[in-house]
Image (cartoon, rainbow, N blue to C red; front, side, top):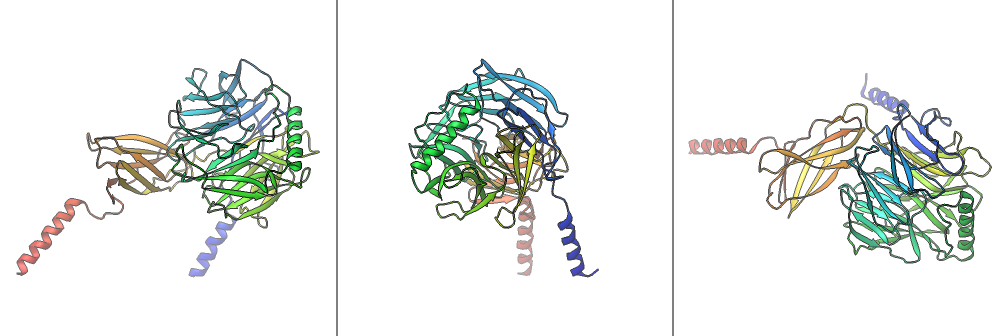
Length: 515
């Protein structure tokens, strides 16, 4: 077979090869009270298989714990002494346990990259932290924060080192593991505008935050029914249209390193908008998808904004019309492989089915494919999200691990060779007792970590391995020895120091004999 035929054969294989299965989860609020699991939402479109979970109360925010387990919160519209948090096994559709928490509703839930802690936002009351393993007897911490965020908006994000960033009324609260103390707060840049949602680039070097103006319209109480919240949104829109505060809403862009004195490095304006809500950055960090609302539209198809990197005040913004949703402000998520995006919202005249929209990359207005999926038994807006990869296939060890030491900081970089990991375990040998110890765990697709050395450690050695959703691990990477301004790895060096010494001695001996 000629070279050209071989190339054409492999191109054909790639063209017809199916994309990896993408499982997802959706909750419907209002009166539908459904929690739906999609084992593979990208298969059988536009009618993928839907599994209704056994949740009888109104479901709200959720977060995946690995690829096949879920923490699902209640979203009640009445004041109670507690809220239930359900721990669910999605593969068997069974309830593992129920955790009773302080009164809710919890509008955002996130598990840290190590899966040792679950963080739950309690609007206007604070933050709840649950220690793993997740069960009815889990240790629960309550941290006082002034948090007033949109219902079910994404307001918790983690950087590659596991540091948490949480949006609140006062600014961005920053917490380090185990998340029981606020390290510092980054203040809001504009007093008349409130944070709505945030996302962070995979390398943690930039944060994008959406916002909406404070229009002086007090929101209804959490105990009020959904109809009052719809009326509140109508008043917000009418006020915004009659009193435009500026040419359009802005996205705040923050650059690392983040401190209590951080300010936006750029204000990116999306013209003719009266609100920007959910934001999601693609796994490669090259695009950000933002939901919002245009001034001249109300009960028509709503737009999705695609922002091209680099993210700054001059970023290119493309308008992507979304068919089928009359309001798409509530939630957006992007699959771990970057091939799909999922939108939840409201579509007039489609009750009692709540629609979600699945978008297939590339995210451009000429090549993007849209699928409108009716959620079984749903009615009204809700939250949606993709499961992380993991739990199947072979885990390949990371490679090209490097370590650069500057002062007491060591920057580690490596190559991710797996598509199904849920994170990486980083180990360090301090050369004090010649024993490796785990110093950090980071999330899937992360390829960088900065280590702070103890006072008595000067030339540490590192290694790293991938972790699967079922608890499996890959082999360790090659070791990397950190020295100031110098990098040595077993992958890069063809001989050890002793071998170089022997080689140098032999060359010197040969030169002596020639004399």
